[in-house]
Length: 114
Length: 115
Image (cartoon, chains in turn blue, yellow):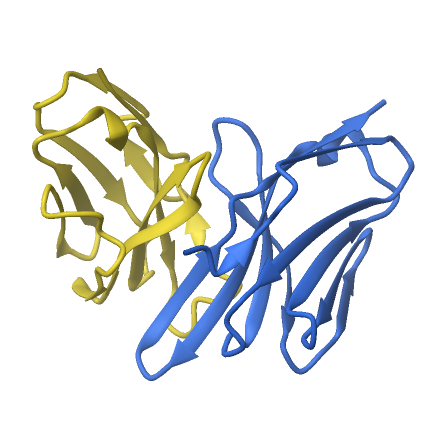
């Protein structure tokens, strides 16, 4: 039972255009959300995060939007660059007591065409 | 500063054999996580440790899987006996004291193939 879902396995965009990656979650108790980026043959690396008390967080070319009522978040990359080509994982954090773990989605492969 | 170290990077074995994956976390980190990546399920958390103590092993698929952390600088994930459906990339990650929100550092992974 996937609590964090990324329904698009892949996405292709042109260099310079906007990339929008989507993520849906089912558990309303999640209070923190993250995006990780993964290149081939490497481990995932943290990209950007957002607390459930906010609806937007921006870091350079990357912006994450959170819609709690829809249980949906998205990552916007603008402008997209060929070096952004990677797998992007959405993750949600569930904290309470000693719990300290992330629930990841299945990932979306982004290909930015030159 | 060395990151999370995993060995081996690739492992090919035959069904029924024992497989041991190894991880050295970043020095000073007191959380250690084991994940498995597959196309169908993405990144699944198998187990995590805090100060060498297993905290949550609810993601361990079955009794064939076991994990240990004998000291702060070493952990193993063992599969015995291995099956073809265990083929996946296994990641180890570590994080410093406090909430592991933005600070999970992943190793490069071990690609396991069970024939």
